[in-house]
Length: 305
Ligand code: PPS
Image: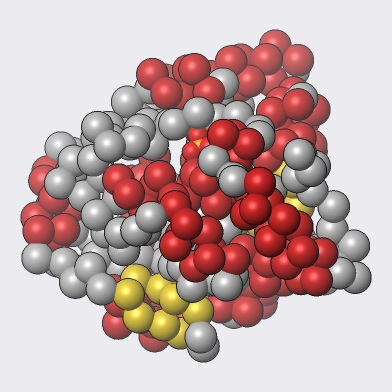
């Protein structure tokens, strides 16, 4: 990778508008709102693979796995660039001098691996017109909330989350960037049979990574040996990714992501919410959860105390 790419990203981030705007009632970074026409007109290709998630659901883990599946386990090639460069995040269009994710994607050879956090109704329509494949990863709301809280603390590109108590209320009411967790996971769940969407769960990936890697491999249409699958599992373990400078965001400008506040690869576990939720918050959460998830037919594990 040309090292000037990182310099350009740092320069673009220097004067960036860090405010939050909204599209159709969903909070999004202002730079996303400003580039909304460009994002909506993104031209998908039929062999694209889009990793879609609510923030903090395991995006980086999933796209590292998909990248290695496409590379048939070639871990050297997987190190070609930091993950935020090799997998364009189509929701963010940085100002010059950096190339926007859309420009980078347009110049990429197929098959492309792309990332989005957009709720399904805001995904550029060409993905559906081209019937591209989507790997959607869902993570239980409580752990997502905790992970997002720490991320908003360390990521200066997102609003300061304030106190845990305030954040708890904002998250539950969907007043956070990329909107309501509930609407996101349910929206994608409802569409899973209409389009080529593989809907998987972070908790399942933690329980049995090989099983989930096999599932993704089949979905992508690859046939890989057990040895290669094992190699992919090892290379994408939490420990390996935490130590991998191409996966752990250490190459990202620290002025924007201050990993001394909280590392990007923070804990990588299921159930960390138990260390954060007060009993009273858990009661409020459970009540809201029942109402909002009622009838969705979508079951998450590790929610109950
Ligand atoms: S982002 O910024 O929305 O793209 O973040 P995202 O990658 O979706 O989520 C980050 C959380 O995923 C955890 N993570 C992992 N867990 C287990 N195994 C692996 N390999 C792995 N890679 C990333 C990461 O630690 C964040 O979760 P928390 O709970 O904060 O640790």
